[in-house]
Length: 312
Length: 283
Image (cartoon, rainbow over all chains, first blue to last red; front, side, top):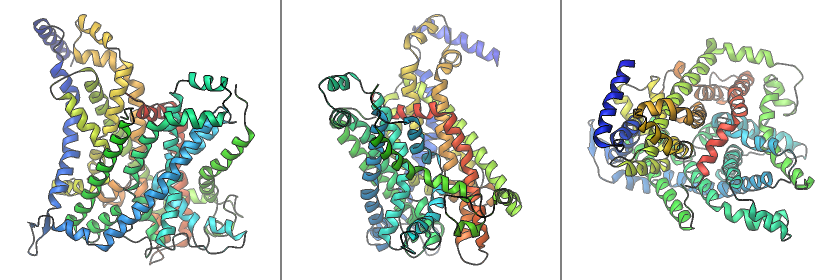
């Protein structure tokens, strides 16, 4: 090993003498190559393969047969798929604004310097993010129980009994939103808080001299400068919310008729693949979902960038 | 110093309650038996102290499968995250300090991949792995978790800011080979970034559910997340073989599974805050 390194060093030095300092071009490739090879095998290939098999169907006698875009036209006319898309769209519209409002409020409150015990609040809001989604869902499932659930226990004190939090698609979406806000608000809060920490304090001091209170400072000076970071959290939220999977899959056990096995596109793809044995259709669902998410996230990035500041 | 506001603190206490109560609930519930869980107040202890009995049941039910799940989670997280952090550090450093043919284009592609949802890849990866005979092996969970475009981006930004270019130039003039510069100088400076990516990947892999769920069929290869879901279904499905007394075991196993992560987060706070804030910095 040591000899090898010495040898390597010598050849490197010889090369350097030949071409001067700028002989680092191929070396850079060696640093990137291990990652990039796996990146191609485990990300690019499955992505392309997914698009490829979505154009095929299982033939009657076995083997796959090319069907063009037939799976896609089936999908667009599939009421179960349309319902799953509607569910995540409603979920996105309800959950993301609420979660980001909470995250912005908490970040501004901690950054304001007017809060007692700011460190405690930062950790308290963040810690659910460290909880695996499946464990969070199990805990909240015990909150939502119709008979003995914790929330019904609390409501019992004001004589409201047996509320079914997963009783209809809309209340299930609401219940999942409350759980997801608990899970992810802290993550977004930390990103926003870090962005606030990076802002220059000169403006606040100038504002304070001009007699602006802390609420005014937060709304007029901090918030506008926070837009790029808010956009970043919005993009992560777009990617996350359309992929909703663990929570509805688990709530399916509690109420299989409402939180059914096509409640979200990912749940539907999963059940198509592993219960219905329709791998081609599952690939069609997940490929189109991935495509839509990537396009929406890219558009959001472009809009965000146009506002003058580069996001990523 | 700004004057502290009691009103703001009060509002934040209400907000924080929402985030803390589920954790308090799972901790108190883990000390009760199933009857007490269903009948006594959720945020206080039950009539009997059942914690040690619950822990014993968690560790011994199904011939102690919980310990196997726990070890599996450890193996997947440590091997997967170690590999990820290593690959990301090399690649991020390569993108940061070298310009080779196509380096800009490749970096763009990697950055674009941040937008691709992991769920879109799981099913095709499953089909490919089943053709290669990798399904239901540890590799089926470890290999896909090695790829982290976000980690590469974080390490590139970290290299840009933490390793001065003229330090590398100076080492070159002294005749040091490129890999020796990396090994002896750069790697040490990159260590905080390495730990950040390591920590974020450990959490990501520890929490992963979809990938092991579809890749593994053997119960004794599953990580904690899928294992817990298996037990939860058994306690709640209401069908044959369901045992209501099992609720306490499910809740206690959930509570125990939280401990390593919460410890990691509290003690390594500096590192994850670094990572998340690096994601938010503008170039």
